[in-house]
Length: 149
Image (cartoon, rainbow, N blue to C red):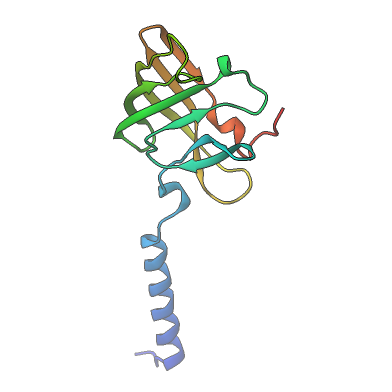
């Protein structure tokens, strides 16, 4: 029977503990993807990433309002590789005559990993269905992935 030294026992135990921690530790890929939403701040528009927002504005820096969307009253039924919600499209200029909300269904999909090395994942597509049809937005463009216009 071979002689077992204390150093060999400690090395084996440390290796076993390290391997078990690797199996249990969450990875960035396990983290819930985030949605990049713009918000109006005192100094203009800024971006914030969030999980299951109740409201969200998708508008890239150089886009007109026609190229963006304001969502409100979002109720999420699913949040993972694909996220689904029901809510409303809000008018860009509330209080104007004829400005009303429109019921909508939202689907977030195609999460990608942040290129800056944070390991965060962001949804790169938002598909919106309303009574007027279907449209796909690209919310990730206002994060660190692509420069502003």
